[in-house]
Length: 436
Ligand SMILES: [Zn+2]
Image 1 (cartoon, helix red, strand yellow):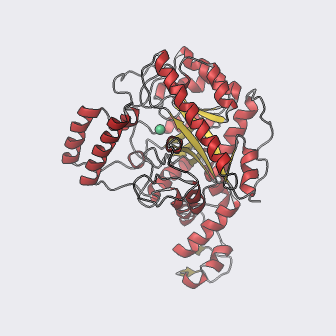
Image 2: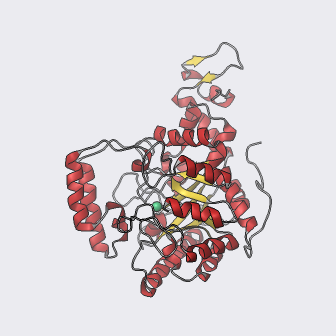
Image 3: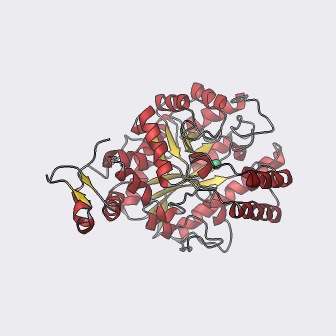
């Protein structure tokens, strides 16, 4: 990739530049200070979007205020709050309303709906309580406008199609509340499609007939169809029926890290052909293969026999039991620490997407507060470091702004334009480029 001349950073970091070409227009190699200055200069101009986090669940807790700054690393702080979003240079966040899967029964669906409504209320309450800090958005145009006002932007997604049960009309009802994506499945198969990680049902049966109706309804309602967590067959089945671009809110590349949650190169090519976008998840296990450790594996197996798979701990309905399971898994991770992935691993995955299909199909979807977080970007206050790594590798400003937000805003606008979307303005994208 070509090195870019960066006059702003040259001025900002002049005192500590380690190497400067003799000619004024030659490429400049920046040190850390220069890179950081350049990153902040870019963040001021471009829209930055993270398409997945599980923070909405914390926001339903009575004593936890997302408008207050919580000290990073302290118990109960979580990885996201509005002041830390600003510190990290993150403008927009899709607050994911995550619903752990219970039984596929009318009672189970009713409980799931109650939980979603609680989280939707929590996002509304946040916006009402902190009107000077954050505003809800449902379209790219709104997001660009709110960015100009200097506030954070709250989009909403729902993680797990279990949240609509067998009631298709809920897609429209949730869309009316501002929901702009639906992750069709989570870690277990549901009525809509097969999951990439359901160990109880290893056969991949793809997308059900009901699932096809759900995709059609999402298309009609201007809701992005999120393919993260779904099986390979379900992914291709969705592509056969969807009329608008798809979106993977938090997944990475299988060729770089062999994990069933990641997309193969064939899937990435199919997603690009459809005009979709793949948003990089910051979960260490999806970014880089863990170094084997027999003692840790043994201890984890014993715990999994007691509580079920670690990734399903969030689905444990009893709160006391869920907390206990979390603490025991956490204790094992502390006893046998693994080398966590780092920002450079995230950008390795982005490099791979660019190599396979180009820069128009990559984005960011951290999964903070849902397992995401890497060694040098451990919470939202450190997000600008991803930009620094892209600058270090010579990405152009134009490419960085696509990855940080333009790509996913392009998909959202196409999905809105393709749907019926009562109450939503149709229009061309981008409504206003922040960087000329
Ligand atoms: Zn997830």
